[in-house]
Image 1: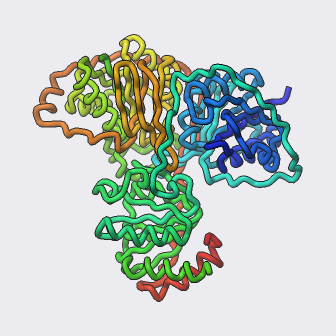
Image 2: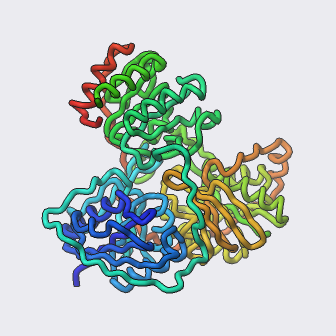
Length: 323
Length: 248
């Protein structure tokens, strides 16, 4: 019997997230390499865009539905998905390393007696078995790792594996199962959106500021640049610890590790903990008055000058270019 | 209440990582170890909870004799006693969590705090796995924690906001930065910690479910170009971002 790969998809507010399509794409890719079958599962109430998974190569999805499951519940999601994995005899469970994925994946592994590998940035099946590469020490080193267990749970880092449309796209077969009395021992009762727009962990472009901005109110320059770029605002640990910016914006070893397409570091010298958290970004721009700052060692493009002059000029230039 | 905090002993975040000759571990020369930064928030929350409910805070760590330094740090902050689960090798998270769960079960702890992740292997799963093996409730990445009788109301940080989670004891909570301001150990605390007991016992380690093939350093980034020293370089920067990098 063919091996089975179960893609565990995440919905928020009734829609599959972008990271879910990354999971679908990768599941379908490794399935063809390992001659395995794929199946997707989602837990939620109403989920609008289930058919879209067909575009990325999975043709079967089961929707475990209950009106109380629109918001996340560790206990209910863990029970339902692990039971479904047992029923379909899935060998691999694939999730995204999002807040939900990180919370849920280990509960699934424990319930399924499976090995678990988190935050994968590279997957290799060339030897006929799956090996994974994942950053450790916030990206200062990479670990190549494999499973020794029969069942396997994996999470992939968001934004690393871009979803690509499959050649034989088709409408998937959607099975909706009503779930009765889910286990709500632990339940999300409310979602509080933070006032900031985009989250650094999910953004494709990040504009970050550090001590070089001198005063908390000067972050307005960072926010303006972020706005014209549709980017998230990030911060160095120094300015977070000084109370200028909230912790959720911190990039680096005790903040978030990010890999956006473009990372613009303004007035950040580049402490080792910060570099660890952002140097896997695809393109890095550094603006800093000290031309010897370590940030320039990882930057693709740099301007060694005054942030107060350069950031507004850059904001203006991009605004013009976008017209 | 009988509270436990699980702490790990990790290389200082300022450490420059070099790979050892076995190509599987890090070169230990010149590496300073510290209490995992997120575990300080866990210890603080355990102490704050004890101050309200009474009881005892026990610090548990799995590793070798060097881990005692990290256990002492938590004792100096105010925890009551320590347990070192001795192991010669580094287990994977699953084996680690099983050993911790065993100890927590035999100690009868109702509330267990962890840091949300260790800054060495960055798995962020030990708390959840331990909770699952104990069949305890679990809330991760917690930035606000309230206990009312048996009931827990916690806020966890997620993309773009916070989730309010309600659950009940017994539970595992994993702490995120921002949950509290960890207290400094006072001189008195440090002196007192020297007299507190650290019980040592062998860790009940089972099999690993994963195997490290290799540890390597990421490919070095080629230093890029300095385009100028003032705003006259900005148009060129924007052109490169559009035409060469194609990211805007």
